[in-house]
Image (tube, helix red, strand yellow):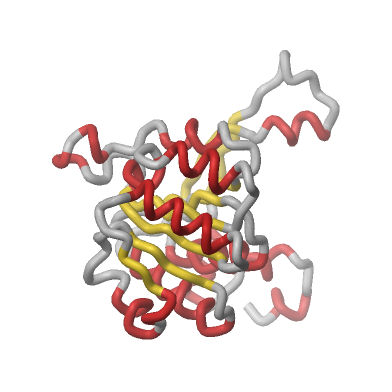
Length: 224
């Protein structure tokens, strides 16, 4: 999914001159399309993730939307103080890109396993957390982040470009859903499960936006 991220970021950067990518001395064979096309908006901060985040926050305070890119634990826990004090506290448009959530970097050991990153990011009040499941969602997530600049955490898979697509999914229901429905959160919680067969239709029929299925447009639906 890293290639899908760079592809979507390059496309957005063509239209938005304030998009900057800062990496922590990794991402080789992935970030080159952005670095080659926008050399003045690409920075390699070296193996210094705290400095990378401080640099990003400084540029963001001057109007840039900065994407910091590194292995999940390095772009989150290693510079948690800078994310907390510099980015989130000042509500700056910095997107922390975390590559390889969970045990994706398995044989490299616990230092590379991002298994508490969501709990860390959820503790920051201004932080938006996004975790696309496939390349299609990746494009939409980048579009959303560009249109809604603020502190954000983008967690992407280490691989999964073309081999897999999420069709079955499950997860905890956001408590705000129950709060809106006026349920007592001390008594009610929820777990959702679903099958996204519309994703298969998107691939087969070349549909670029999943929202087309839910607009109740009969002209759109009848063509299939």
